[in-house]
Image (cartoon, rainbow, N blue to C red; front, top):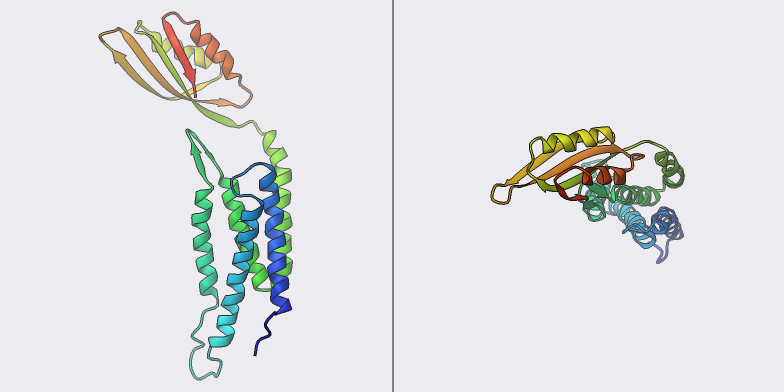
Amino acid sequence: MEPFIDLDVVFRLLLASALGALIGFEREVHGRPAGFRTHLLVSLGSCLFAVVSIDFYRIFGNFGGTVPVGVDPGRIAAQVVTGIGFLGAGAIIRDKAAIRGLTTAACLWVAAAIGLSCGAGRFGAAIVVALFAVLSLLLLKKVESRIRKDTYIDVKLWSTDLDGQQARVEKCMEECLVQVLNVVVEKDLESGNIFLDFYVKHKADVIVGDLLDRIALIQGVKKVRMG
């Protein structure tokens, strides 16, 4: 008969909780939607799934050699990998042209893997992965801040429909080191106005405020907005 409390299982659950919480703490500090408690619970639950999978295999498997074992201990763990994708998807937020939450979703995925590793008794691998994850979150963030990244924004412009107005605006953007990727043009024939919606790309160090000031000085421009 199995003991009511298996200290080995308790240790696995505690280690999984601690390592998951370690990753979640970094997410919590940065105000992410899935933080300390979420990562802890994901890792803890995954660990229990792994422990139960192994128990199913050990208790219900046929090891007499006359027939196949008949129980796959990896079946529940595989469902954890699939199920955690739905939880991670909930942490991903689309904000206009930007997508936020991908790192948090990846952290949840790693936390689940750590929990499964602890449940399977792979403590060394779980600890190493947790440390790698935390170090990458802390150190690579500083590296990313030094990389000149492309930024994508919408620039909307309302103007009098003058000849060559679109070309003048595009030239202004080119002078400000902003690349036009796409443009939508709408003309109001009754009022004689034109609406231009530019989807543009620029480097992070380009001051887009200067671009708006320069566009606003173009003759016929009534309103300009960036978003």
